[in-house]
Amino acid sequence: MESSAFVNGYGDAAAGDVAVLSPQITTTHSQASLTRLLVSPLFSPQATMPIHLSTYTPGEDFGRLAMLAKEFGLERIRNQKNQIRKSIPALQVLSDSQRQSNKRRPALQYIFSGYSIWLELEQQEVDINGIGDLDVAVALASDEFNLGGVIPSPHVTALYGITTIATDEEARSMFRGEVMKTISKRAEKRQRDGGSRKVWPDLEATGVLVGAEFDGVDGGLMDMAWAEISFATSAEHEAIIDDLHNIFYSSEECQPRSHPWVPHLSICYDNPDGYGCVLTQQSFIDFLRSKCPTLAVTADANESTVKFTRAVSGISLWKTAGVMADWKCLDRLEFNSLETAT
Image (cartoon, rainbow, N blue to C red; front, side, top):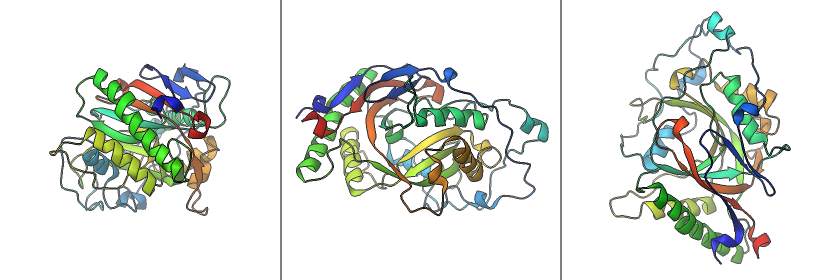
């Protein structure tokens, strides 16, 4: 069965627009038309170092971004170190006047690399314009924390920083060809084995995480802070990611995958100096509970391990070279279930 039997294609989306996929609606909607909230700052200056700043990402063996960069194509590789900090880079402390203003923070300055493959998640509470709860979350987070930019489209990264592709045309060709054929074959095998009839298995949310990475500190490779909803991987997910990785990194000089996939839905990015004074675990939890009711359960530590499940509704190809404002969607495909297609 050809991959076209159960995907619908959508072409170039302008960088900076929020492109929404739903079974009936495909629209490109400017973030400017979303409701913007001007909020009061959440915290007063910290006299002592908050306990949550003792690690980058509690519970993980290595810095998340360093691990992803090493695995998925960033050329520079450092020796991984334990994430516990022996010293903490200086953190920005906001004055009362700064806190009371609505001045935007600088845009994220980190320069990303290569091409990336993103998964699009099913959205809830979609309005008449096709804007869903995940679109709203990334837009509101930018306002809540006075950030200098909005993630152009909510996504879970499958592969980041692919540098083995020479041109946009080659990237589109491989995406429509080898990538979709590989995903199709894996889905058809899963169906024959009596498993899920979906093109990509659902993702199960396990909690929230706010972290930061500093280039050259504790094995870090990137300068940025982020807030995310974390998802669990599985044997089936790992098999698909292996297949995709092998498409772009099949030569002998390319290193095989060495770490499990760490699926996550980033809600916002910031420069690392915003970590601990603007963007904290508690401020992100408060934001989800007050502004994002469909995602708030992820912040509840008393719930079961799986907070909620979201279907993967599509897949997209992005050129992620440069700063976040430079990112461009090159192609997007919407999934239909195999059951619908057959």
